[in-house]
Length: 469
Image 1 (cartoon, rainbow, N blue to C red):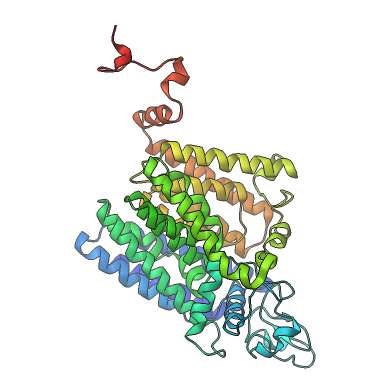
Image 2 (image 1 turned 120 degrees about the vertical axis):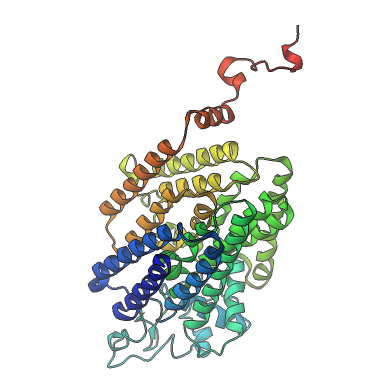
């Protein structure tokens, strides 16, 4: 009963937060942070209460709660990001037979495609009067306001994301606004919930862990309300990892290639999957799928197919190393980039060596979590990739990274972000030390550093030919 009440309360908090706070602007930031923390607190209580529900009812409550929370997330338009406006524009452009990589939204070549809800006329020469109705408006060309961010550059999204945009927009008229992508995000999110329940049951773990995704305020906000394409990347990456782990590297590679062609960052899920030789087939298959998905756009666009991606990486500070919140405490510039790359590489090696190929979930959490701590993304929707593997592994402490990134996305304060991340690191280390016994440490040591490297020769074992006189 407490779990059900918690879900209903969580849905209410999400709905009220969306309808009463409007689009995230400077005057609303503290309110957004407060409502976010309240939602997370209710979420934690609801999940903890779910642990005491009879096992036969858990699946029904998790699914029902996912629907209720998801519907609550549909009650208003995007409130922290205008990315779905770009998604809609890219879909509209593709249905007109034009590559989204060729022109900027302000290009006169596409002026005839502009719908009024994305390019409304200015009122009294300004966009201010329209902002309560259309969120995130900026000044555009030819006396129009623009609901699209970075309106003066071409799109940055990889090919499978663009195919997704075209697919979602294919079923609705040009006048349809944000709801199509929100509904699509809800459908994908519910699909992930069902998939997690199936995998948890197959691996013998309690079904209530799926609520970490199904009821997450982060999922409700970024997968549904703001309908970020990252939810599709997370779904495909999770499906790919599961398929590889369950002995289907070809199908897993296809899913992983599509995931990478959706948002690039899902490529980091590969290392923990490669503990068995036959699993390595997922790599060439994934690369082939990634390349093939680019082919239609290369044919129509040529060398411009990368769009604004290189410029975006430079704009975000990844190129010169100024972007890294934690590493910048130690060094900056090119040295910071080298240090971040080294940390990610070390995490990849450790995850590869320590992961159980049949259950690589903890390795995935380590790989993704360390990458986020090193790269320190500033947008909460990136954390969608982490949550399914937290649910599969039971490493709940790593969820603190998602909370830290979420608060950073609402409250722009670099120094505070560092403290939130350091708090997450402390929690992860403390819980890991408490959870891990001496046998686990020794097993990890043996996997990372073979006996021949520690002692100069293999440790004899009974029946080993090398131990015989």
